[in-house]
Length: 254
Image (cartoon, rainbow, N blue to C red; front, side):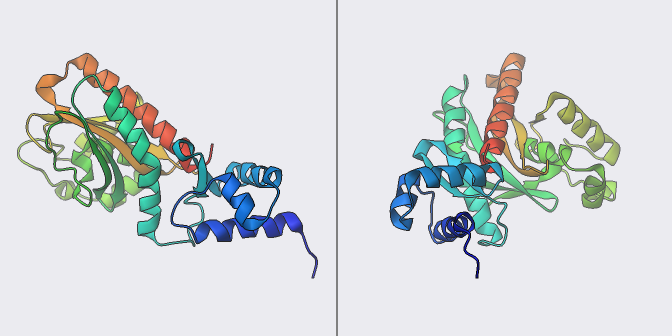
């Protein structure tokens, strides 16, 4: 059997990381696998470029990306995304000019499910707790995810206007109204909702895309509407867009 050291070492790295519960430093990989550190860094660079590994900057460590769908279950992949996003959410909250709650959501059918959350000082109490599901078309995170989907998938999720459930008197009541909201979200590259989940609360959200331009998660901020000027809305919208882009870079290993 021919021996190709680079291929064998790549598989050893993948197997090692698959057995670990969290990211690992390059020095640890080199030590435990008995490989030269220079070789490990070269392998990591190639595997990140191909999308198999992601970098955890705060830990100076590396872990498997979502590209390896055969490794782990859907829930473990969601947990991995949450772990990558957590320091970004903490930074987002710390930099906000008004009290906010930051959250990470994923699309689950026509709902969003919240998988990570950071509450800032004096931030409002929200329903966006981990594990909670809400109608995607009513939330800022959900709208940003829907706006990033092909129109055919949005139609599949909402084939009839009666599928657009409402909370109270707010929110889109027809596909035409939803399409206007999603078009606006695409134009400004982030989405908003104002009182459509909880009265007096507003939210902004932006989607993180994978290497196939598919929305895998959305970053959101929720705050009291009476505490936010229109400039605050614009600033927070730009902030979630930047954070979602940073998360996307981590997800695809760039």
